[in-house]
Length: 333
Ligand SMILES: [Mn+2]
Image: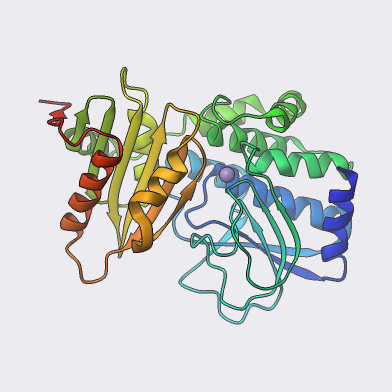
């Protein structure tokens, strides 16, 4: 374990500056692991770290988290032009298609827990552990190995990252996650955590929720909801999390349109299969990936009709989940 930390430090020790890049539309695991890496590298090696991301932090809880952390991430539009420092990717990888990494960029570090991608080009240091439930658990391990005291704000963020990425400390939680949780728990600011988790939502949230429920169709143990145009891209993830609580439902798929993209979120009560499922359905049309029980994908709509595109995908999903013969039931009428 200690070798991992030494190898990480060796990979970056010559650097004065590093750009930390989480995946697009970063979730709590991506946000907190980016902040943790910045804390580690700046405290131990005095490296200047800037965290940048593409997309939108839309979910009220995630907005509350970045407020609590004092807005540590800088948003970039489109691609990052002329990067002046090498990148450190967290909760994503080169080739995953869900980050703003410019082509040909220098990559110093990759720390992730998604299935390993083939890497073209040189990366100084790679730590990809798909068996771990959250990137925050890996970052907690590094901080502990480096004997950096974890301040309460960071412990709170890391804990929340693990909690959300493992569906409330349940699914996909392994030994390293449990170790991290036990270590972080006495350090967290419970009041702040509660404020983040119970963040107040805009009035529009309830309109979105009503529309999402109206759009949901149930096919035996499968719930599918096509939300149409959305105000922020992680609304599909939020809705899918919510619908998975429905009795009898084992699979949830939520789709919606954000700007030029069709966004897909998949959740399942099963321990495995969500990542493969979304990859099989999306195929060459876009990018997709994820873990055993939570996954997602995106397709650039281009000059296609978005509704037709979504209908085609729903057809394919129903076939994959063996519910193509089942008539969909509405939820609200
Ligand atoms: Mn993650």
